[in-house]
Length: 423
Image (cartoon, rainbow, N blue to C red; front, side):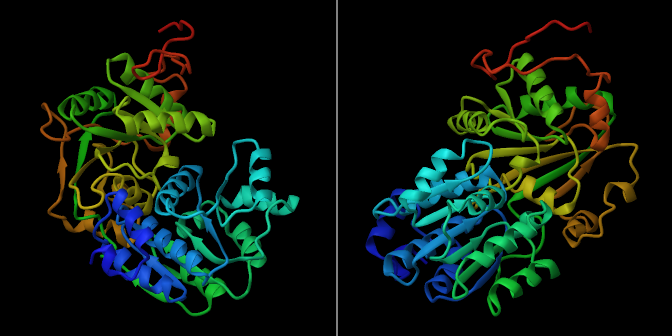
């Protein structure tokens, strides 16, 4: 269905058209009418299917129609709420709506000033919003339309108490839209607590996205970095995100790749928000082709043209794995993913999770292959698992060269050596 067939205002349709959105995705076609009708909604959908625009169009239309007073959007990470703000701002381009970003890691004072001036839509992380509530600088008494984006991730990150405190401050008469990658007992429990009754929308199977071809590759630890370089050379035309287990090694690996001539940079939770946004903008603009990231970047990042995901370190669980590889193959595009596994690992160790999302690995999905070490890899053949051993790797192991990141390094990759270390 096209957006101009969905009973939306012409100004909204025009803004969507300027965003190059002409035809609604399945989640948008199913969810937007439910939001407009004023019902509570629980949405499970694969990543990259257009969920942000689905709730964004719904809440902006309701605000402009006067069927909601103000809206609150909660999401787990700074990166995600920045993405949401950008999308909602574009959808609301033809309206005089005030959007306010509230997140930690930056000065609270500008946020206080903005909140005091009034906001129609508050887009916030739970911790910083609770800080404002304790200071009495955020008034949620008119926020009768609430979006809980990536609610499963907020639970995983320990935000349940903060979510409860926030939901106690919004009006009892409210509409709640909850979005999650999984709809399990925990999600349904908070849905019941926050909503009462709700419409449940599930898009697609709980499975690996069909648009992603994934290779699991086996190789010895000492061959891991050389194989990664081969893979990056083979996919030189693509934007690539490489996931590592630790902040330290994300920086270290990006440095080593930049030193080898690749346009690489890193993003991890220890960086300031301004630094993270600078790196992400370079990646979007193509000034950096390779982004090395910890799981802080696994959820919520919306970059259309990422062609390849490399799991240098295996994810801790199936949900994280699916969210990582979901950074490619978005909005109908075909993506590729490569996961490094240790050739000395047993099958039981490799897929030890009982999570149903690992079923596609176990049953032999036609889009999944496993290559074993030896010889030059064809598409996506590579290294092994690091897991918790990455800490040792970064603490003076066989790659422990002591390189450090510089904020003032060369433009390509943004790296230089700040100090000489004995090798």
